Length: 484
View 1 (cartoon, rainbow, N blue to C red):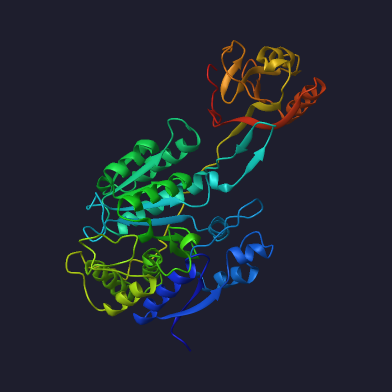
View 2 (view 1 turned 90 degrees about the vertical axis):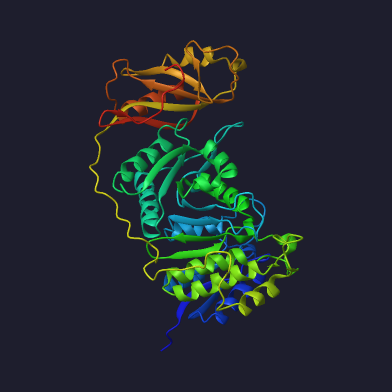
């Protein structure tokens, strides 16, 4: 019986086949105990009419091996094609995206030679849930989904990561000064969990200034945990300021399955030219080796890779006149790494991976008591483009609707109050949020809401969506409108 660990491998599109060939050559030369189950994913699968970009047999391979080494893919332009990365992450519960960003100065040019940070990004929720609607002729909607369990899992993972890898501080980044409920939940969960790790420093940054600091002073960060979209953006910023997006590896970790890849795309413009840097995928493979319990091989490859950089053997994306000794292509770079297997870098700190450094960490959710939920009103969204879009016209008409005390409270347009007593200068689209509540704040029933909707229809209005207004243990579970 073979003692090799079986993994699923996809060569991908664009530069994917070239960098995967280079990576596997290095893995084999280093003595990695691996058996490869190769699957086809990406553009050619999409063009067969499979919208996920991955055939059912490929999903079965991942269920069997639980480890996926994946090259970049190309998603065809146009509608109907799902992101394979998002599909894989969500289908297999790969909730943690781990992206180390480290400077390799002076061998890779950077203005921030002390940078050594890790970005841990929530991987399943947020705007990447992909729930979008066109609701009127003018207005499109994308839902931002943030859950308490999803937030707790990724935040707890970040603290466990910091604990295991000897990191000193975890920084949370959100935009909760604007999205007080959704991002506010993430921030509050972070503050609660941080109390359980008193030996690890913690702080919070608003995402805009946090991103600016990554671009200007990345060395002040250690571990960053953030939501899906923000993490996607700042990890590319961090990789670029440390030298090159082409160097960045990435792990996507779930409770059972893990996927390892480069953070960059398929770069079809340079495909087949043998000039792509395989380092991003190679660094992803190094993370994979640690994950599956082969840290000695991971050390050997990482050290040989750093020695190659020190010796000035560089691909074109990081080549520097006066520092680099030779500009090489994809396969020649891989051969240079192979020739240095067993050697250590002399300037950079050699890699050292502990056998206990195996992902995923043991992340357990806290038991929760379900809150008392009460319906106190409803937001009815209406598509209306008549009477010069005068808010007073729609407002006065909707005041005729009254479902046993459930009546119009206010109207907003793009989040700005326009009725009653709105500003005449406010620009209005054809998308109106009409908030109905009782005067005394009493709870309402679904029957009242249904009665209200029927009255709105009889008034001649096209309601396109409703959002119920709930309290949870008496705490408002919806945002107030400006002026409310």
